[in-house]
Length: 71
Image: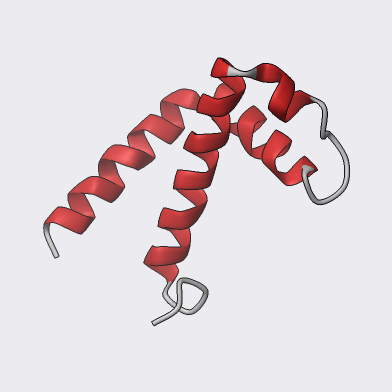
């Protein structure tokens, strides 16, 4: 089943995108910061969400891991 039609998979993909963008911005800020508008701006926005809401993102990662392990 596609990740678009399965809600849990969609949440997992979004969570991984946020975590990956935040990590890439921490390691190489120039890659993310130069594209603040347009389609590539989605990655900048995901990185900002990962930075500003990092405790909530971390809790979401743990909860997602638990739900995947218990299935």
